[in-house]
Picture 1: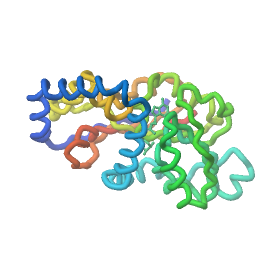
Picture 2: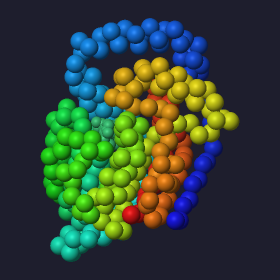
Picture 3: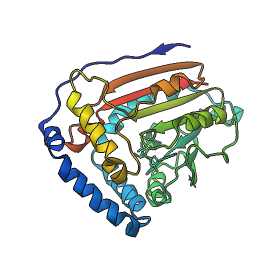
Length: 271
Ligand SMILES: C[S@@+](CC[C@H](N)C(=O)[O-])C[C@H]1O[C@@H](n2cnc3c(N)ncnc32)[C@H](O)[C@@H]1O
C-alpha cells in the first residue's frame, strides 16, 4: 500500500480559547439549559443545523472551497467504468453527507451524481444549489446515513466524495465498508475532514478546548453530532483500500470559532 502523510507546522493558539478554557462552568450551565430545552425542540436542531450550514457555506466556507480545490485536483484524471460516460468525460460520483451541496463546482462536466444525507432539512438548500449546475446530472437526496446506504448498488460508482462528515458519523468503520462496497474496482475515494489537533506541542490549548467542548457534549449538541476530537486516518489505513495518500495540515480559516477546525486531513484512497 502506497501512503504519504505530511504534517506541516503552524502558529500559536488564540486568546479566546483561553477564555473558554477558563470558563467551564458557564459552558456547562449553557449546555444544561440547552439539554432541558432539547425535548421540546424536537426536529428543530436538525433544521437549525441545515440553516447554519447554509449560512456557513456562503460566508466562512468560501475559504473552505479554496482548500477543496486542492483535494479534488486529481478528479480530472479519473475515468468512468461506464463506456458512455467515459466518452463524454463524465463520472459516476456518490457524495455522502452532501449537506447543501458545496462540491458541485469540482465535478467534471456530465457527472452523474448520487447523494445521501440523513438530514432531510438539507433538501431545500441542496435543490437550490443544484439548479446552478445544469451541467451535472444530480439526483434528489437519498435520506440515509453513510452507514446504512444499502440502496446504492455494489460496484456501481467511479468516485466517492466525503467532505466534513466523518466528524459526525456514528460508525466510521461501517461507512468505510460501504464506500468500498459501492466503488468499482480501481474507484477512488476523495476525503477532506477537520480532525483533532495533531500538533500538540504548538497547539496544546486547542487540543484541550476541543476535548472540553466535545466531551461535555455542547459542540456535538449544537452542530449535529460534530466531534472535534476525531481523526479517522487510522481507521482508513486499516479499512482495506489498495492505496492511500493522506495529508494532515492546518487550514488558514481565521474566523474566531472555527479556529477549532483548523487541523484537517485530506487525501484520496483507491479500492
Ligand atoms: C458539516 S456538514 C458537511 C456538508 C458537505 N459535505 C460540505 O462539505 O459542505 C456534515 C454533513 O454530514 C451529514 N451527516 C451526519 N451524519 C452522517 C452520517 N452518519 N452519514 C452521512 N452523512 C452524515 C450531515 O447531515 C451534514 O449534511
